[in-house]
Length: 202
Image (cartoon, rainbow, N blue to C red):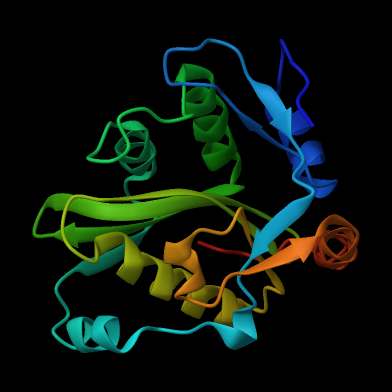
C-alpha cells in the first residue's frame, strides 16, 4: 500500500508502526514520503537467529567497539549515504528529521561499530512495546553492520523483546534466519508485541 502523507509527526509515526505501516521515500532527493504496508513481512525470529560460522570466527577477534545510541545521527547518515551497489537510498531529509526526533524521545536507537574513533558501520531502528523495527544498516568496514546486528539480537533477547521486524527479507538477512511472514500472521505477532509495556533499549 502506498499513500502520500504530507505531514508526518513522531506521534503519527509511532501509531503507524503499531498497526504495521512505515514510511519511505522514492529516493534521498525526493521530498515526499509514502506509507508502506507489505503483504509479506520480513522477520528474524529471535529464538532462531543464526550467526554464520565465518562471522563467528571474525567476531572472536573483536574488531570493533560496539556502542549503543552514541552516534545515532551518524548511523542515520551512514545508512543514507551512497555505497557500491546502492547508489541511492530511500532515506531523505524528512526521514532524518523524523527519526532524529524519535531518538530524542527515546523510541529510535542505534547500534554502532567503532574502529578507534571512526564509525565503521551500524544500524538503527524503532522500539515500541516488545517490538524492534529494524530500519537500515551500513558498513564502511567488512562485517561492521553484521556484527552490529548480532549485538542487536543479543540485546533484544536479554531485555525480553518478542519481535524483530526487518520489513523485507533479503538473501543477506536470510543467512541470519530471516523469514517471510504473511500479513495476517504478522499482524498477530505485532499486536502481541506492541501490547507489551515499552521495554527499555538503551
